[in-house]
Length: 267
Image (cartoon, rainbow, N blue to C red):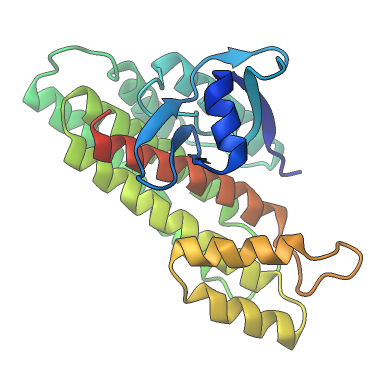
């Protein structure tokens, strides 16, 4: 079963008020002024329970964290463990040698003054891994013989985790441009998967025509159209609701977009 977790973050009352009034907007773990795009707050401090006027509850995929800036190797290890358990339940295992590459990359995240050679070796290894899993993901995404089967879904989650690890390593070494390239490409693949899943989930010609049309839109407009679908009555929806896999990746895309905003601001 595909689920999103609920996380509670501390938030100053004045930020929370402007967020709810519409002056500010949240993209993943980033809160910014809607008019100017200026970052005003990062969601960092997690709470066990909601505090009136001083917290906000949000949905989060387990394979990303709220912000790239405060993402740690410990948090990534927990995300990897969760992903492994989820994959095992589907009889999918990450090869031991692939896990070794990922683990070594995680261990290198907070190494200060990493040499150029060491950096190149780590990024080179994880790039090869990403390329291989991307081929598997692309194959399943295009598998027209299984129009209702989301076999690519586990592999896009692996790709998101790998790309975020690579981006974090780049940031630690001052490679903000490289980091943005990693997040850019996984963001595009995530959007591609969401659009494909909405099409695969279509059961009528009307649904197919609608989701085919909006699939041609840029991500922001596409998601606005999805919001309109979700806002229709559940008892009599205008179009077929997106599958949970698409909703999950929609959330991932939101956090990845937040990472891009962080990278553009150089923190």
